[in-house]
Image (tube, rainbow, N blue to C red):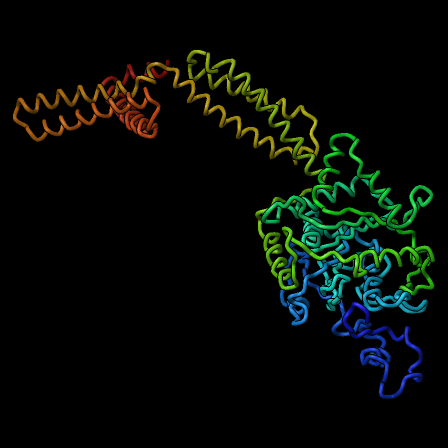
Length: 556
């Protein structure tokens, strides 16, 4: 086989002539074909050439696991592990024919030297599991177990790996599931085929932006263009009179879709896509025909497929897999071997299993969050402005009781403003943002209280007054104790007086210079604790000595 290493080619029994045409010793027929003839009801994909689940989707906790052993068996074969790898992956919405397309790629890789690589008209399509219907078929990420070795025109051999992915937006997958699968396949592939139906709609581009950004976040380094080739494959194209089927018509169509003269929001989406991929292309594929779409027994035979579809398919597959068109996988400008690809898979899956990355959200949830956060910010700003008018930096000291009253009044006004704003997500969704607002307003109020207290001249003088009082008391104690001969007490009192004097000097220096603020804070805390303790003790003594006056004063 020109350019491809000989690999066992096993076809379903329908593709073979009757068994009588072959000798009894099976000359000319692969052993697996004989097995299929004898037991046609078993797996039509022969052992050694079948789809292997390499990334497993856990439907219970919506997490993904890498089957490293299975991937190692595929990539670490002796004749493959040191070859540069070409990874062709197909991704997109579920039930849009991704696996169906990959099976034609398999036919091409098996029959690359033949112009009739698509096979006979009555040959069923086998390989990656596919079927008609509306329920999803593929989950996680699958790789074809047979890696094709191709000799490129310029000499070196490369390994070609075909990858199938779980369809996005089915009824069982979260946005995070879809983003993880798409991002993983894009990060590890050299060619990503973005499989779309009928047209490129704006939501398709927005989802592509979300998924690729999720992939870019996971990469350790942000390269200028982190991903390689992206091919938009538009299935069931209905407007050939505007843009012809195939690559040329597709590229003209893509150029119009990605033009950057729209609204700024739409421009940002397009700029992001251009910044992520080193190469962009588009291929327009016609509808395969009514028999394919409506016949529940359709098994991929060419005679049931529209001629125009077959014609364009013959152009599409070589465009991706012909030796001269193969794109080798690169990361950071360096070629990736099969051995390297295994390690990259292991590293990337660990990132998506962790909690370092933000969870992507649906458009409604993201919009509702932004909507509520904007309402919180507006209400908080209103509270700040009104409180600044009462006790801002240029306002005099205000009594704590009055400040508390203003706080409650302005807080109520801010909450009413938050509730009055029309918000997406409903009342229950907004409830936690209202609680967040209340918490933040209380924190802001605490700061206003501290700022107000700093304006109180008596509060500001509390520390030096306390230290002076301690110095005076200890001086008197030291003098009296020395006079009556209690030298130890006199010495202790003198020591405390000296420490108080040093503390006062240090506090004054901190206040003047602004340096060593932690020392000033510690002195303030000690002085405040001492002040509070003495005040409490004096109040207690006063209440005991004059209980009637104390009760009457507090009643007033």
